[in-house]
Length: 132
Image 1: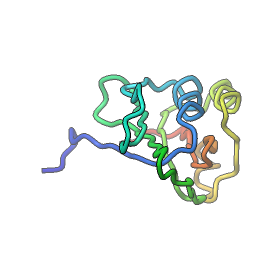
Image 2 (image 1 turned 90 degrees about the vertical axis):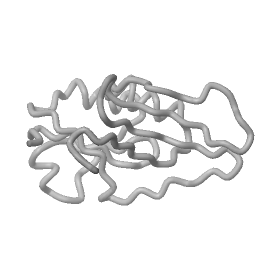
Image 3 (image 1 turned 60 degrees about the vertical axis):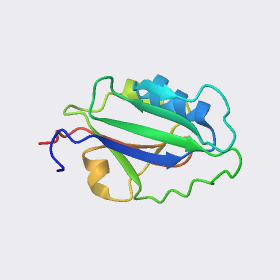
Image 4 (image 1 turned 120 degrees about the vertical axis):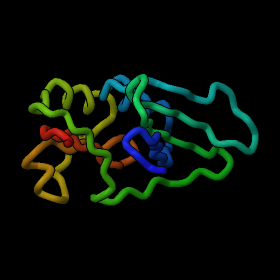
């Protein structure tokens, strides 16, 4: 049964896992939970990031044999609820590590946070509101 402690994984393709790691780990501050360390024919390269001990993680994949071009839309969002005002130093760190600050498609996110496109063009929203 799906409940509050159900584990969740969100996955999406990436052109460059090293660039994604710089953005999500060095920029955002997530931990590397797992990554492939050697090329295995027929398997995807993987990078899993998230907070250590959390019930969720974020997986980025790259298929070197049949790479997928990421196709983000303006409404493909990864929202992080900070519960406090967005620290400009965090935004600066994200842009220094491959991100681009962009206006949100939905004005709600500009009112309550900051949107930064990752190196593949997917949008990370840093929301000042709390969840729950």
